[in-house]
Length: 586
Picture 1 (spheres, rainbow, N blue to C red):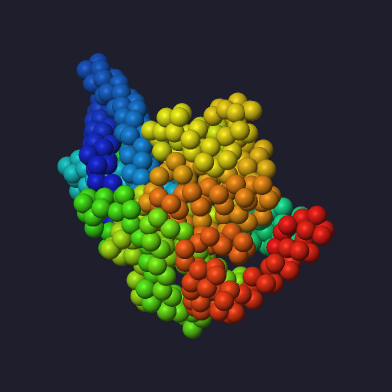
Picture 2 (spheres, one colour; picture 1 turned 135 degrees about the vertical axis):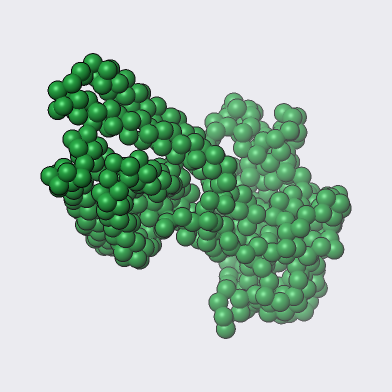
């Protein structure tokens, strides 16, 4: 009943602590049983009119031991529960993070970011209760009635048997509720993650919503999802209250029935005053452990619902990630990047790439150009391992990228997009992300190659503070700092995806020069819309509608009078118009 072997297998180190918690509770129960018998003997002595001194002393000692047992149960239970909680949270969250790192950017294909955050935070918190409270109480609730039956059977076997027979009514009610609760809590978590996903999306796009005055519409959509979540939450609460009422009825009804059995047995002479007192005092103990288990059941059920989403993340398929240390290092100095007859589709029957073949060699600049929607960024995703080809192969050196561990890919390939993320902190901290062992001299060298060193020297140097996303820098400065960080990463392959998009002319020229210098020693792929940035490329691949339609040098492509020549002529005409109006944007 509500014991998930998979969950137990995920955190096996919690088992000794769970068993220790059960043992402490069981010892406290034995002390309570002794106290009940001691009090019963005292009442019997009073009823018989004999000496009560020795019975009174035994009862006082028993009550003191029972009180100490309760204190030990509470203290040890809290301490052991805390250790179990820490183990569960550290282990499960560590497993999720490790899985995400192995999946790399492809984790979004498994679950949206908001769902991952919610499952790893609140979902694991619910599972903490499952391990720290529910499992120990489950074992104790099974052990306690059997112990009480053995202790009470020598006083009145019929009464002990009747009380033990009534105990399963509580778990039976839990099982009945469980079938209903599982479906309801699955809906609860589904709507909860959808609400979080909507909230995160609206928060990230808040500026766009304000610009287009769509915030009121999105607010209405958010309110509707919140109302759906409120309704399912209320249904969960109704389910919990109803089941708790049923369990209360069984538990306290059973205790009352035990008292009635004691009185009937006393009337019929089956037991004496001491026996009737023991039955009355211990009858509630048969049911209270199961009643407390019912209280933990609902939290545990919520955790179980969250665990389904957790396991969906952990069970996400991975490619063959067998690591080979020698293979992982053979491309560190210089290696090429290749796509051979690659097909890829985001959706069935809607191919994004068809038979794409591209070769990028060390020591030269390779460019991929084409109109928007031609598949350029899809190629970048395949080269980073974020996407997997449906057919054909993507290789780094002589290794297929689909067979490489994610950390090998990230060690060999650096990707720089048009919106590289800068973290709040200092310039030094952002640069050290690329190379934690970099010296100040190496960091300044990278900044010089990105043509951004002069600006930071005029500020606080490497200790210049950066706001979140580098909001206190201009677009061009942010991108040049990102280029410097990429240079410091020092990988054999670099992919620049529209790295000069939407920045000022000075920064565009500086970044183009930095990329050209880097191409002399590395394998560099530039994905660009503006053709002026790829004129010096050794090889240019022109894409259109997911296919490579032309390839060659700038001069060869112009002479071919094809797609590239048409794009070049159109952009030159637009640049002329831009210069006449005082800007140079295409």
